[in-house]
Image 1: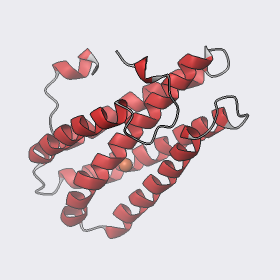
Image 2: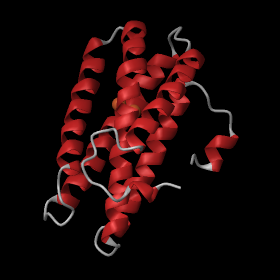
Image 3: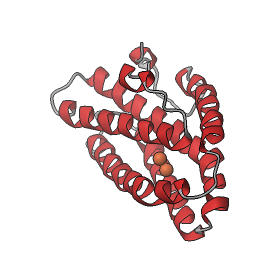
Amino acid sequence: MTTAKHAAANRTDAISILTDDHKNVKKLFKDFEKMKDKGDVADKEALVDQICAELTVHAEVEEEVFYPAARKAIKDDDMLNEAEVEHAGAKDLIEQIQSMDSSDPMYDAKVTVLGEYIDHHVEEEEKEMFPKARKTKLDLEALGEQIAALKETKQTRVMSGNGKQPRSGSSSARA
Ligand SMILES: [Fe+2]
Ligand SMILES: [Fe+2]
């Protein structure tokens, strides 16, 4: 399920895991842009479901594990508050997309805007928050372990349909 490229390298610290998630989801948004006008509708829906699921899991582990630890260590409440507001905005868009029919004329636009929104958010994390966190005494390996375990639990929940995914029939998208 993970790309072999990343699985091979022993990237276990919290920031490496989160950065790999960013790369992964960026690629999924790129795939969406390629297929949105010409792709098969079921494939497109499955891809969007996957994007929403991956983003939801990623945002939750940041909110539950990484952000609280970073907030304590970095002591920059403004930065952490802004990141949380951005998560809330993304979550709102994700919920709109998940409750929408893909034939809705606004569907593609919402997914594209979500991608742009995430790009901006990820850039702030990678250029500002993560470098600041690396300069602190945070135990990034221990946080990474926590994040990896929590991700697994959450992925099982989201992929088995116990998450907030009203649409059915596309759960076989992932091998
Ligand atoms: Fe984030
Ligand atoms: Fe992130």
